[in-house]
Image (cartoon, rainbow, N blue to C red; front, side, top):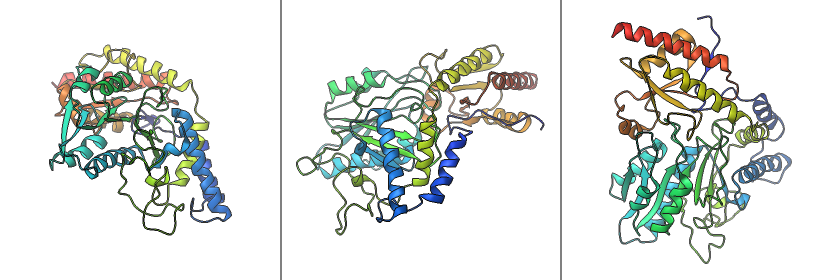
Length: 405
């Protein structure tokens, strides 16, 4: 294999990371690696400064009303779990007489689906799945119609990780508010933050789960959960939080005592955070180039145009770059997706991802749940020549597949 390695799996995690990310992490380990919030010595204070800077920068990025409303997590899945378990447990503790209803959709990631399934399988919640159209798009009115006065939570992805289809989140939240005004709306923006503007106040989002290692370009193991005043009030003595945290432990801000702090972010942050990872995330956010997204979308357009010219290729989702992230899902007829990805990897040194992409119900709705699909996702460092090379490889594989059929 003589060709250089070509990475086209940025929807899973962005790569390569900018050099400043690793440099910031090394600097943290060498000069700041105390335990944040645990102690008043120089290293502990330096680590705490890193944590608070990460919190501040994330709050700025999503227009949160206060950095204190940013709870740092170990990734987007961790943030989603914290929110889902927290809302359901709080509703259960409130003593709801009727079954708690939770609304989600078939295009969600397994971080949402599996977490909700563990409650639905035990009949702890009334779980409703809203279907998508043939392009993977959700109808805000169908989401609202699934709600009742017993709806505690609505979980929606901002964009499908498998298809790249961007969902009408603002319209969906507005529709939900009109039908079930007390329901909290949790938005998974793992695939969009860093690509598209996300304004939690303008969009009226209650809970937002964030990934640090995708569009933001940071290291793995970094994420955050934003909580609005509706989800977690400022004054917990007068109004109970609607997110209950079962994760208990040290916070550094309240000792002695066996109860967790009642104020954010400490109420939901127990244990030592991934401070070295957040040092890298800060560097990644500082180095973000606003023009990168336009570059990636131009490459996505090149991918779509090229795949449409190859006989035997089926593309899923939106027909153009309008309404999608820099992600394309496709299949080659008569050849399993994983086999295509294997050939790309072993014979062409090109990294893509094949299968169900942790979104099995989305593939079921598309009619390809047996095999899933091949997902290609360019990044800031991908070039037009790289895409030409990828398309040439797909054309060659498609010809071979056709000859064997």
